[in-house]
Image (cartoon, rainbow, N blue to C red; front, side, top):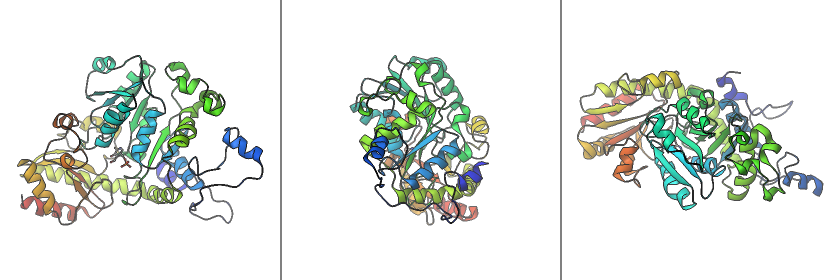
Length: 422
Ligand code: PLP
């Protein structure tokens, strides 16, 4: 099936007389007849739902659907995108380990890596995504466990060279983790370019209506954890499951199985049944929305670029973008609704522009069906130093615009009247 069709049907096959749309299984727990059966579930000898933290039928539909969309062997929904990225790393790195991440990633992920994971003993080296192969290889240490990057970086809108990073990661027995939030599998499928693990904040385009927090980790099933020799947590006995070895018990799905039965068991950042139901509603119309978001953003970016009060615009479909060629390869169907631009006149002019908008909302979010804006330097990235800001490709006056699915002329009219106030 094509992706558009999978968005409707993957993960749920109603039988005769079943509800047409996946029901909300609003239950924390599931009943069994014998202690032997429950024991087998706890020992992972049998598969089945027994407690919603570890699995729930409604959440399962969304996990199967997103795994199918990305082309993976399995997925794990989490309570937010932050939890997904934290779990994606913690599943293979612990105290004493190290990861390599690009600098141009979401500010919350920068904090997670540079502050919180560091406190847990996981060190990170940030590299410029455009660094040379030699520089990237110099960042690798004997205790390195993964490379990390974002397909379309938030908020600099840089396009990540997934294939180059995957090739170098694999050369050193490392997996590449890609946060594919902005692109969604409708615009880019990182596994087809060699990525091993994909994460999403489903809070963004997958939900798309600004109503439900969520995250997901997807496992390509292609990384050979055993051959790498760097991942004893996956290839040696787990005492908390009576010596179970993930690569032996779960084969290609070892990584995602471990994330569920170990990290979700112990940290518990699970998705709720209602949350999964709402995310599924969003997924059903994702193809239509992402196409419209991308077309509107392309038109707005070209319009902004010609405006005399605009200093610069970042959007990969602009010929002036350094990522134009790369976007043709990775994002041939469009580049999502998110763009960023700087108004002439610095921080003050940027603020006046935002305060003058009438239709577009000022809020901490992107990917809503309604057009919205934010000011990264004073909002999402405010914890970062000026040095970190510029490493993420952010200027003090930068406005991040998330173009919605309104009629494009109405979006442009709002921007035009706000720019007239600057
Ligand atoms: N990854 C990216 C690219 C994001 O933009 C965000 C949030 O904006 C996150 C992860 C974190 O997701 P959440 O807000 O769902 O925790």
